Image (cartoon, rainbow, N blue to C red; front, side, top):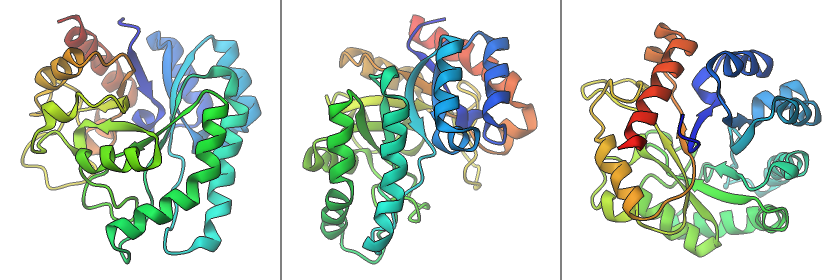
Length: 263
């Protein structure tokens, strides 16, 4: 298996942390994207020790919750969780703290960016001090409850404003204008991939790579030409994955992504 392949705990979304570990053991998964939600449920320090005992590397944390940028009084409780994750897993650095920007639909875009800069200032500094990158993720435009950034181009611009990295969530930007050129941006430090079957009106409804219509081969070649050296993370969620079962879906995805990278 190509060492750049990582498996996200989101791909087994309903399983707890220990069930994920057992699944990863069976599939021979060496590199993982951890869910902050699941690690908190297990206990952050215990999760860090278990991950070290298993000998796995950590590419990122996801499911980190999100800010309500309309409500500054709520920011501290959210950012304290991110500080705790950085502290507990500092020994696994470098990894990426993957964040959506949070809700801001009542704000103008630039005002939302300014609010995000203020809300995350201490987290960004703490991450840098511990060798961790904050990576802002582009999010599907239906999820305004999660983000005000729905294009990869806007994620890149916002990252430049805040001096962070970018997570390119390919399932949310694969049809974006100029995507091949955008994937050359040096701020991209993490890539999440899955597939999508054109015609589906459900969300989320991600598919195993190769089962759908996203031009993954072309997109990964663009990243390769750009010299991207980070993780290619399998992040699948939705009814197709639930119906097939996590283990079979993840096993097929690992083989598919490994084959794409071999090209």
